[in-house]
Amino acid sequence: MHTFSAKSASGNYPIFCGRGAIDSLKSLLSKQKGVTGVFVLSSPRVWKSCGQKITKALGSTTPISPILFDDAESAKTLPTVEKVCRALHRAGADRRSLIVAVGGGVVGDVAGFAAASYLRGVRLIHVPTTLVAQIDSSIGGKTGVNLPDGKNLVGAFHPPAAVVADPVFLQTLPDAQFRSGLYEAVKYANISGAVSFIQLETNMGKVLRRDPRALEALMLHSIRAKASIVSKDELESGLRQVLNFGHTFGHALETAGNYRRHLHGEAVGWGMLVATLLALATNRINPAQAQRIARLVMSVGPLPNIVRAQSKKLLALMHGDKKSHGGSIRWVLPVAIGRVKWGIDVPEPLVLEAIREAPEVARLARGAR
Image (cartoon, rainbow, N blue to C red; front, side):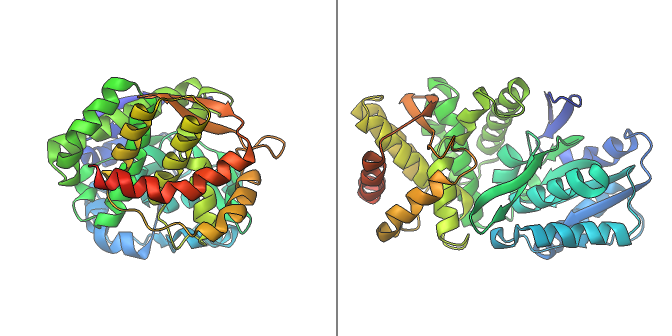
């Protein structure tokens, strides 16, 4: 097991990562001072799969009664947060209570926002059970839910007391969910330097087969990168914006499909392709490097199709995204293998053209693997 540390304004918090990390949960809870009660938040699907492991890790001698809620992206809403907060109140949670969030990105976002809001803030420990949550969303303190107008438009920064990321939970993760997480790993390869990019290019086959060593190495690299970035820029005022590579278009694509057509990572995969095309169109990257980025994205697997007729709708959604400034879209674009720049304004005609070209680029990159 490996331990990293992330900085936040309210203090540093540990990130436990690797095989056997879940065994640290009981000891971790015992070190939390003045806890009056522990409340587990999860989803019915996750708890059915992981409940026994969590119960054992907590050292409970009696069955745990977790607060369960729907973990579909379409259910990541304010009514769900209200439901969770009311359940916490009925269960007797007070300001010294501690929430343990067990699940993927939706569980982490909802539980995190509930923890930030309930009684104006209670402690939180993340136990992420999907790849995207383990290497990305559980780290950094971002919490939030969706509105019909866009993704994650309501939320708060609420750093956890700890994160426990154990690959044991990935063994039974469906292939589509596993690949969804890999797109976030591709993002980290694109923002963390050429060496990181080359390593993922070389090892993608092993990672897709869930080779334990390759998968753990990927997790360690991504977690280390995320922890380093959020420690330097907790509130996304500068450097942390690189983490939005692929997300500007990706979030719009998720919203346009009512969070049912594309998994988060799949939408980010399309977003990275669109951003790479924009970098190429604005002469920020050369064709050979752009081709390598597209090939790495598509090496994860095929992506659900984009509905091209939605191009203008997608553009409107991007203008309304929380990452826009004064209604102007600010892109994160690749400028070399393993390096990106943020805050870039791109003319709208080029954006629409990139959206139209992305499916053909994906087809060619998939065929060139």
